[in-house]
Length: 94
Image (cartoon, rainbow, N blue to C red; front, side, top):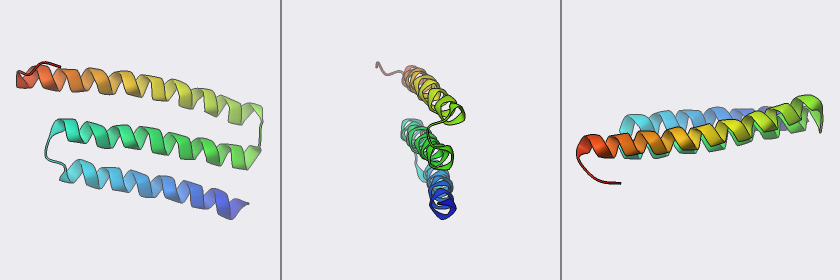
């Protein structure tokens, strides 16, 4: 089981590197925001899966699930606000 957990966490690290590469290569700020949104969703989901594989359904894994839901909610709000600010700075309407 620890091999599977290590694989899931290794995949989370790979997704982080992929998003870092995308942030470096993408030309526009709105494109970079898409890479960050992918990072938020994918890595938080993978860490939550690793927690449930490690502990099963326990208090600690349920807390991680709640934290993931809150984190994804805030990440969505912050991505939206940041994207809107970029559009306003460029002089375009959302």
